Structures are given as C-alpha cells and as structure tokens.
Amino acid sequence: MAKIGVFDLSVRYGKLTALSDLSFTMPEGERLFISGPNGAGKSSLLGAISGAVRAAHGRIEMDGEILSGLGPEQIARRGLSMVPEGRRIFASLSVRENLMVGTGLRRDESAVADDLEAVFTAFPILRERANAPAGALSGGQQQMLAISRALMTNPKVMMVDEPSLGLAPKVVDEVYDRLCELQKLRGLTLVIVEQSSARAARVGGRMLLMRGGRIVADGDAAEFAAGDLLTEAYFGDPA
Ligand SMILES: Nc1ncnc2c1ncn2[C@@H]1O[C@H](COP(=O)(O)OP(=O)(O)OP(=O)(O)O)[C@@H](O)[C@H]1O
Image (cartoon, rainbow, N blue to C red; front, side):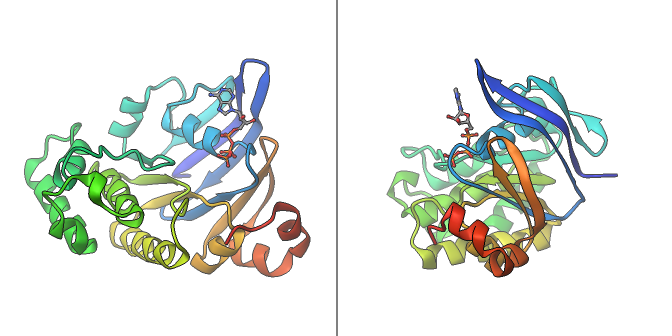
C-alpha cells in the first residue's frame, strides 16, 4: 500500500487552475523532490496534501485512508507534518517554546521529552540557544528550528517547502545533511519542494518535475541533472 497516494488531483483558485488532474504515489520511507519553475503548482500540491488548500476534485490518501475533506489539524493528527515556505517560526518566543508548539496535539509526555532530546542531539545549536528568542537565530538555524518543530509532532510523513530559500550554499548543505540523517533515523517519508534540480541530484532521491500544474517528468533526481540538459537550461538553476 502506498504511503501517500494522489489521484486526479485538481486545485483551482477562482478561474485559475493551479493543479490539473495530477496523480502519483509514493512508498513509505521515500525521499521525493518536487521541482519546477515559479507558479508550477508545487506549494499548491503540498497545501492540498496537508489540508490547507481545498481540492476542486480528486483524492488524496495516506496509508489507504482518504484524507480529502479533512482539515489540517485532522491530517496532522494522522502523522503528516508540514514545514512551510518561509519557516514561519515565532520570532519573539524562545527556541524551546517554538519546539513545544509542535507538540500541542500530543498526549504522550515522556515521548515528547524523548523527542526534544533527539532534536537537541541532532541540532546542538538549538540546545545551546534553547532559551533565546527564535528571531535571534540565523536563517539556517531558523530553518533547522522549523524542521525540528515539525519533527516534534512525531510525524510519519514530513513535507518541507523550499528549505534552501535564502540560505547560503554551505548552510543548505548542512540543512540537507541533517534532514537526511533524521529521515533515516526516524524512517520518515519525505517530500521536499526544491527549485534546484542540481541540489536534488546531489542529495539524491526521486524527483517530480512540475510545470503548469502538471507532472511533466518523474524519475531519479541524479538522472535529471546528469542527462536532461535541455530541461536544466529551460528551467534554469539557481544553485
Ligand atoms: N491563494 C491563491 N490565490 C490565487 N492564486 C494562487 C494562490 N496561490 C497560488 N496561486 C496561483 O496558483 C499557481 C500555482 O502557485 P503555487 O504557489 O502552487 O506554485 P509554486 O510552484 O509553488 O510557485 P513558487 O515556486 O513561486 O512558490 C500560480 O499561478 C499562483 O499564482
């Protein structure tokens, strides 16, 4: 059974069609990059899966259960967590308070404490700065905080919208290294919006290339970057 299944999904904003009859499935533990130019529909796809954006038609499933029609909180309770574009941390709250925001739906207090320890072990800087206001962190540290906050919900599936946005290449490397370690450690199914197919190829995984609200290619990220120079030239590559 697929971990995530998307079937004939369409999303419209008024008269504008953002996603058009889009379908794909992904198995548990997969790392899937979603790439494509501005306006391709990448964020709309993540929004529809997480319940933040309403589908015009189609069906989304997780572990065979239909998610369509459920709200973001109900979907989060089923184990799907989202790291939004722009990170959206609470600048005036401390790092620790930001992390605890992610645990609002959980009742398992001792497991929450274990997860906090695991996050602090993965990102020692967050332990060091636990009582500092999150707004005082650097951009890369804020991205790590946003990822950690999502992990504190104890997700099975995590979706990250453009983790490299506005970060220096070296910091992006570090964010991806940690993300991949955590995926392995927790057996996460990971969906990442990444504009740079070269970056996706370096990290490794499957890639869906979107354009105009449709999937135009689906394959190994490394093969895209190595073999399809025309695509690369057409879409450009900010990395
Ligand atoms: N809330 C909204 N209301 C109206 N139109 C929207 C809304 N959100 C997105 N759109 C439009 O839907 C299309 C898909 O946008 P979306 O943000 O999903 O693409 P994207 O691939 O994530 O783009 P980017 O890389 O720029 O973030 C675009 O034409 C966009 O202008």
